[in-house]
Image 1 (cartoon, rainbow, N blue to C red):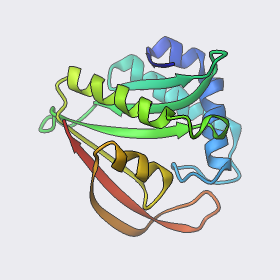
Image 2: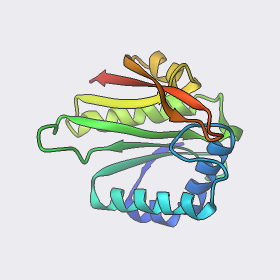
Image 3: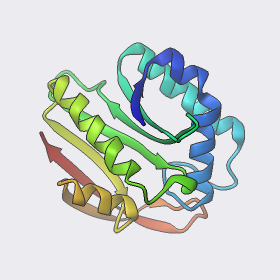
Length: 170
């Protein structure tokens, strides 16, 4: 099931969210964290996200498995500068390795886009590792690649990787 969490529920489920992040980074996902990954760092990140949700500048979507545990996440960041009230950033598409290849990423993205439309956002932007599984999800969903920057970020093991920027006009 895909749903949006409020700030209180996000704060209450930091452990589950941290587990998804840990699994993705340990699986090689370049999502802003390096190995070895300290548990406290994961939890601190998600506490910050929960605070952003509570403050109204972020919307957090989760996928829950058959027993109700979080197995995927995606954020819509709506806290934008004054001259960009029509725009939002998409961040932290994470799907636990145990739940991949079930369409969870596509369903999270669809829910996020619906919410963005409800909020009057017409331009969405994101970045991801070039030619990654995530980039294929975005392209299948109609996102357009705006460009690629070589050696922009590092994989969790320290290997440089290119990053591609995508946008979607709603």
